Image (tube, rainbow, N blue to C red; front, top):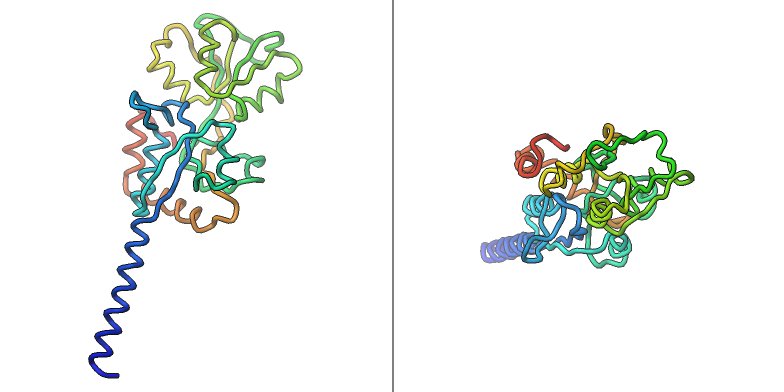
Amino acid sequence: MTFKKIVLGSALVTGALLSSVMVQAQETIRFATEGAFAPFNYMDNTGKPVGFDVDIAHALCNDLKAKCVIVTQDWDGLIPGLKVHKYDAIIASMSITPEREKVVAFTNKYYSGGVRFMGLVGKNFDLKNLSGKTIGAQRATVAAQYLEDHYGKTANIKLYDNQDNVYLDLESGRLDIVLSDELPTYNWLKTSGKGGKFEFKGKAFLKTDQIGIAVRKGDTKLKDQLNKAIKDIRENGTYQKINAKYFPFSIY
C-alpha cells in the first residue's frame, strides 16, 4: 500500500468517525410530560413545560449529548401516544406498575414516591373507615387504584383528569378528602397558600412506589442509554442539584 493510499484511507476513516460523532450529537430524544403535576411537570407563565421531570429530561439529554424536545400530553393519552410514536419516552412522574409494564418498558427509577390523604385542617377522619365520604384522586394513578380497591364499595370515589382539578374540587367543598402522591401535595400545600386551610391526614404509605421513564417495548437501546444517564447524573451531582431546587430532602 502506498503512502498516498494510507493517507487517503486515514482521511476517510477520520471523516466517518467525525460524521458518526456529529450524528450522535444531533440525536433528538422526544420526551412527553403531562404539564399539570407541579412541581414535577407544569406550565410556566409563557406556556413552557417546566419542573423536576423536565429538568431531569434535559440533564439526561445533556449527558447523552442529545437534543431534548419536551411535549405535553394529557395523562390518559400518554401511553397511547408513546405506542404510536408521537414521542420517544414519557417522563411524567409515572409509577412503575405491573399493569403498565405489560404495555411499555421502564427505566430504572429516577425518584421514589408514596401516597397520602389530605383534607381540611381540624377535620378528623377515620382513614380505615371512610364509608359515605366523597374521596378524590387523579384517574389512572396508584392513588386511584388504591381507592377503588379499598373504598370502592363503601365511599363515593371521584376521579379527575389531572391533579389540579382534584385540588379545585377539594377547595370548593365537593370532596371530603383526597388521596394523592405525597410530594406534589407537599408542594401544593407549601406554595399555594392553602397550607393553613388544608393538611395531610395520616402518614404516607405505598412508599415503595418507584417512578420511571417509560419507553416502547423493544426500545432497548434508548432504555439502556437513559439508565446509564440516570446513573451518571446521580454520580456527578447533577441530580442532587435538581432535587434541591424543589425539595429540601432527597426524593430518590
